[in-house]
Image 1 (cartoon, rainbow, N blue to C red):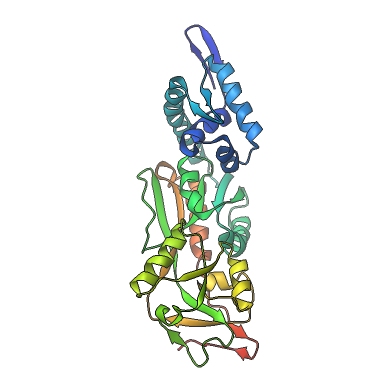
Image 2 (cartoon, helix red, strand yellow):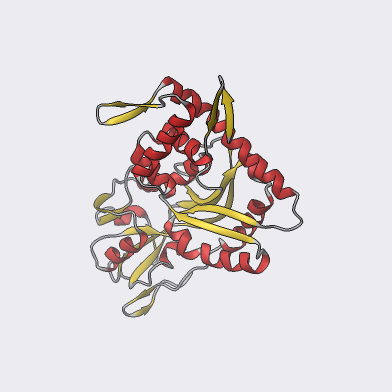
Length: 323
């Protein structure tokens, strides 16, 4: 992307500009590297190359961290517009084609990677053989920033009505499906029960997600509304690990049907009197929602993001059929 400024020929790349923009969003070289899939050294090299291209110092070291100089902050603001214009140009070019083809970068959380993406990719191969999908597993709370920053073209995420994720006007969020949470307990821990209140398990040890995550805050909000404070014995984000711990008899936790499909487990699943939901959503930038490849993939994802309820089992056999 060559430009001439004050008689100086500057030639930077989109990757260099994106590294700078992500640094304004995430604050550290390490966080930028994780977001973009580089090494920290690779990000530093991108910024150094950008400094050589512009002839300006963009970063300065303050103790053990770095911060943007005034020139770096100024360029970062313009870089966001440059990257947006570039993305809009790609959309315009796609519209000149008579077929849906091209490459899309998709961000998604672990459960979606295991249960939603595989059938979606099969449909993409059948319906749109000219489309290539490249996916990246990431923390579910980071997918919104990843889309806003252009790290990915679209992403599968989660939203919780009890703790909704703030809406960025530059993003479009489309709900694909809704899941209601149930209570998972060790086999035989609450015999004869099919429907319970969260407060009924208030004195039991809990396996909870990080309290700083949207998921963790949503669980805590619903429990407090039910009149108790859950005792977190284990703070676990990974769904398969959570199910394994419940199966081992060390605690209880909330689960959805999609979560239960990740790991066949011998545990009891009880319906909750309280309503706790999560919404599976797809996120893209607002100017790109009508881009042919994105629109096509969103429609495929919408058809595959409706999980069915798996059979829940204990060591004694099937448990808790729908009532």
